[in-house]
Amino acid sequence: MRLKIGVFASHGGSNMQAIIDACRDGTIDGEVSVVICNNSTAYAVDRARAAGIPVYHLSGSNYPDADDLDEAMLLVLEKHKVNLVVLAGYMKKMSPAILKKFSNRVLNIHPALLPRHGGSGMYGMKVHEAVIADEDTETGATVHLVNDKYDDGSILGQVVVKVEEEDTPDILAKKVLPQEHMLYVETLRRIASGELKI
Ligand code: GAR
Image (spheres, rainbow, N blue to C red):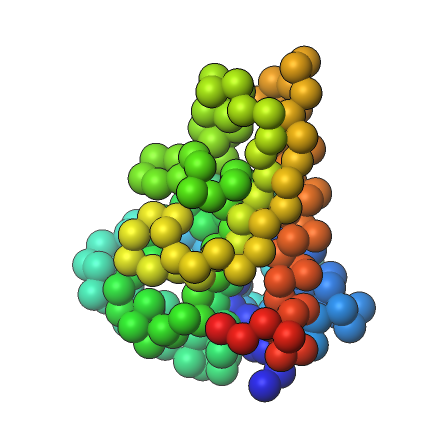
């Protein structure tokens, strides 16, 4: 089935952009049908608009009731005929209602080699800071299925990045991010082509 991807983003949206580009150049047999962002000023919103993709700001600020927010998200996903949900730097926990409706069809990317440095509160720079603090010699990124626990679902793909002695969290973030883009695109390509069954 051709992928109709619904991306959830919160910040820069560089992973989302890599996925949009890979759909448009034919690497991934699919399209990004819609973007949902919980932060109206995120650069991801500008990127989606620039790409001509419908983008919705849905969050606790405009839907204070969690059930209303779930309903609004599900309506948007249904309206745009989404068959795969992709979390790309989305910093909120995915709601059980969406996980139920999209069972085994919600993916996330994490900027470390899960199960290392995952779990509640581990996101963005905090992850890279933990890698340096623990003197890990390698890190990387993980694409996994999302379940009801943070960073816990089945691992679909990983990429390893060597940590050099002089690396800082900032340097690591800059090294890992382009690898995330490649990993996410490759994982989605494999799902779209049927090479990877989920
Ligand atoms: C990425 O590094 C992603 O792995 C991370 O946020 C960044 C978003 O960048 N996600 C997490 O830490 C989730 N736990 P982007 O908005 O430019 O794609």
